Length: 181
Image (cartoon, rainbow, N blue to C red):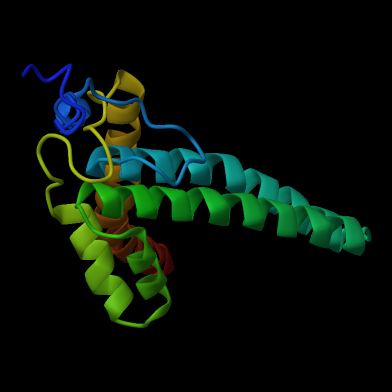
């Protein structure tokens, strides 16, 4: 008896793992589904701050210029959008590490949030597809530029400031003392 004629035969199916190794996925902006690599997390956070900081300054300017209600509403809107976007970045980064996105709630716990940020920034994501989807596409030039700019503003500039500001203050003191003599 053939399988087509046998009503008790198991149905013919395709391989259930077939869709797991599909082509890399492009990350979507406000999505909580999918994955996100370390470099994209850093670059997207940098770009988000470049957009939201001037908007927050504008809201503060509105508050201090007399339009308190409009300033507060603008600030709440900017804060809400940046919160939703930031949480989506962290959830997708957790997905890249093959961890549930609910772990993002650990960010509200002191010291635990530091450990979670170290985990998100320094641990490598899973290779290939995982339960949250395929790997993301390779990083674009914009992502790489954002990552380098973040390193410059967060690492290099503070080190240079820590060296140059005391040196300048010492120079000013010596110049003032030489003028008094």
